[in-house]
Length: 435
Image (cartoon, rainbow, N blue to C red):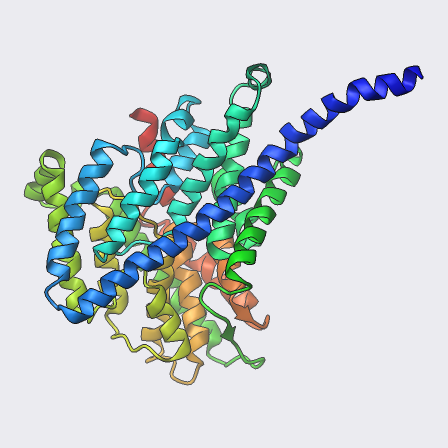
């Protein structure tokens, strides 16, 4: 009887511990999956509206892009400071910087601002993706769940719980955004945590799976850019293509990172003064540049580039050889004002453009093969996270013949990029330590 009474007394305590250890994480992961799906649909809806009206009125981008550039900068600086950019630097700063940063950079206000302002930016045709913002939104949403824990529970090891929640939310966000749970795990280890504690690995993976299952249940079993068909036989020029694409993607990605990290070294003084003293006007000017580049390229540089990348893979979209360079210009113009927006999807589109352009050199090779190599190369160059880039792209490949080539391209591009700039997200995250 005493044993039964003891079990009855301890059962609620054990249930509460299990709820705090697993239940809150799983509940948060489900919420992240739902928010990620709704956010994706909102961005798709906004960009579809932009394309619909831009196709009817050629002059519309020259009004919409500057207007949205000004509005997004004003909103971000006035109401949502900390929501700018992709959001991954903010997550890294919260994980590795002072404990107070999490409460500043991972809040419900910033979560709402990230979604709202990036939606407005895509309405203006800005070259942004939703994957980085989804990571930021996921981290902010999970971080907010710390309120479910008793105060004494958080005092045992200050900051540890908050970091675990933010890490799980960020990884779950990437998993739901790309419908790629393995990419979420790898990204959490390689880019965010830079370690893999045994005590948190099971909870982290389960959170990623829950978010992925929610995304899968709503959107179905889809591959982000579709399936890339690669024949079993590899061409004899593949090794040369791997090296050339790795170097080209590494140089372009490295230059892109250098441009974002060293604006004071290449922007004219007049523009630097305009950016610091009249940021709203600077946002409008950047929108004008984005509109000009977009109209010049027949609309191919607007938005994330998802449609162009998929169209190149399917052979239904024709872009010029200068497409990667023009897309980079539009990306820089979209990022400089400081409005929310991610780099993943535009980077994959630029990589696809690199492979498409180099098909003129390697005409005997399959175009989808070159596009896959370009995708993994440029994404690895921008993020300097070659394993994450490899995992994201490999899930699109039907067949394993290209695995080693993709890994080699990612490593080459990542190392070449380091000659130009340090890891982009890490360098940007350090700026939040001094704010």
